[in-house]
Image (cartoon, one colour):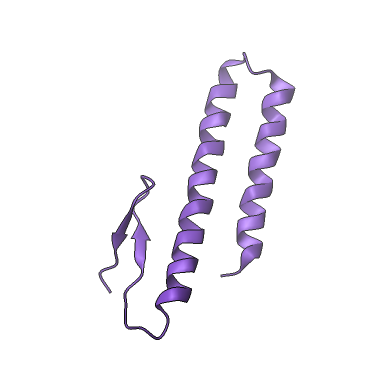
Length: 78
C-alpha cells in the first residue's frame, strides 16, 4: 500500500469539510458529516501506524501492531 491511498482518503475528508460549509454547520446532517470526517482521520492514523510498524518490524521477527478501530493498537496474532 502506498501513500496514494492515504491521499485519496484525505481528499474525501476535505470534500466532506467543504460539504459541511455548503450545507451550513447548523444543518442536522452536518454533525453526521463531521463524524464521518473523524472516522476518516482515524482510518488515516491506523493506516500510517500499520505502514510504519511494518517498515520498522521488517526483518526483525517482531509482529506489527494492528489498529483495533478505537484509536488503539493491539499486537497482531500472526
